[in-house]
Length: 186
Image (cartoon, rainbow, N blue to C red; front, top):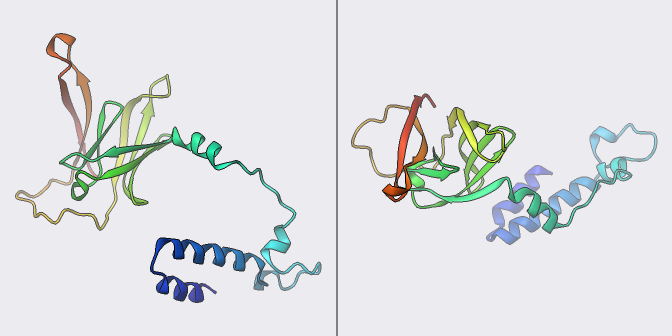
């Protein structure tokens, strides 16, 4: 079944065709007889027959979007491959400078993604208000195909500088200064 779907995916030329092929695959997979259910005595041999009585709660797309929107932010990468969020700078990928990325924050984890590809993952500790980040731990940078085509002039020392941005007094026109944190091994 999967190989047949792979054949269909290879022939698709647009994203809409791929979505249609995937929907057809899920529908067909759920109604076809499965080997795992061959010995059932109740004549239920497909996942749809076995689990047909299970009904979950259906939520409108607008409600789901509103609930999940609080977890996702869109940010643009700066010239050095960093994004800024909650007075912090997080490294994503130098090759994506200027591109918009998704920043997911949930359950003590911050993830940077570009086109559903994980760029980096950080552990975060929130302030008591639950909205601001107090500490960043355990950074992990993913290996992606988005590396910068520009060769580095100097060899990079495999460390990630996480920076918390502190604002100065109003008399200095709120000029932001960065205070680099410890270099952490990826």
